[in-house]
Every structure is written in structure tokens, then in C-alpha cells.
Length: 226
Image 1: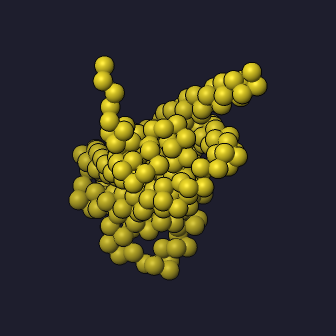
Image 2: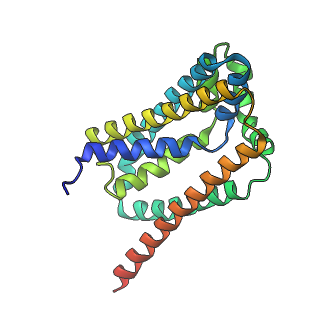
């Protein structure tokens, strides 16, 4: 079976990561659910497009501004350990979530302050500002960028980075479009129980990913000692 071209591997990696990071119930998803039920598909989709643009910018900053740092052996090793702990923490947090509204209020604190200053009036700018106000998005892409480059899924050159960035944009945009379409049809049928179920599924995926990361690190440590 022939191997996939490196740029295609990078694009698929970015696409899957984009979808996975968009599923957890956060400020943008909640805004799309609320506004989509009230104003319809077009308004919700514009919120998603604004959020997608800012997500793409954060991802580009992570790849271009931090990728070179991970070429140092010690920093690369420390980042791999941190990424394992970070993914495991997020996964357990999502799995143990008991109330989506409570978590949403916690995540709204920073972005509400920023919105009071910028006063976004359009749906597009609402999505853009809500993603801009969430520094966890940038941190997440820094961590994932380190993992992708260290595993060889994304080559540390412009072709690999741009392919991954294109995949991320497609994945995030597709998720928000599908969510906007579903809520515009469902008319507020997304209950808190449904949102909590989405949260826990995302958490389970992150825990599995973290465990794979942990096994890989353990195998490397064992081979190094031998």
C-alpha cells in the first residue's frame, strides 16, 4: 500500500485536530447554539466563520512562532511530557464535567471583558472576538504543533505547516457549519444533557490520545535506558 504524500498527511492531521478541538462545549459553540436557534443558520454560520478565522490565526502563530523552539532536544522532551499532562488534564476535566452552564460561565470571564472594550456588532466579529479572548486556543495549538512536528506528522517546513493549517481551517469551519445547520433545524433541541454528552465524548477522546502519548514516552524512555 503506497504511503500518503507528506503534505496530505499534514492536512489530514490538521483536519482531524481541528474537528477534535472544536467539539468541546465552549463559548463559541454555546453562542452558535443560542443564536442559531433564535436567528437561523446564516447568523450562526457567520459566527462560526469569525471563530474559524481567529482559530486559523492562532494556529499559524503557534506553528510559525514556536516551532523552532522545539528543535532543541531538552525543550522538545519537556514539551512532550507537558503535552501528555495537558491532554490528560483536559480529558479528565471534560469527562468529569457535571454542568455545562457552570463551565461556560468560567470561560466567559476573559472574553466578556474584551467584548466590553471591542463591542462586536456583527455575527462574524462576535465569533472572532470570542475566540480571540480564549488564550487556551493558542496554548492548545502550541502543544499540538509540538506533538505533530516531533512525531513527523507535519514537516517543519512551509509546505508541511501550510498544509496542516489548511486542514485545521477546513476541520474547524466544517464543524461550526454543521453545528449551525443542526441547531437551525433542531430549534433548541440541544438540551444541557446533549451538550454534556458531547463534552464527555470529547474528554474520552483526549484521554485516549494522552494515553497513547504516555505509552510512546514510556517506550522511548525504556529504549534510552537500554
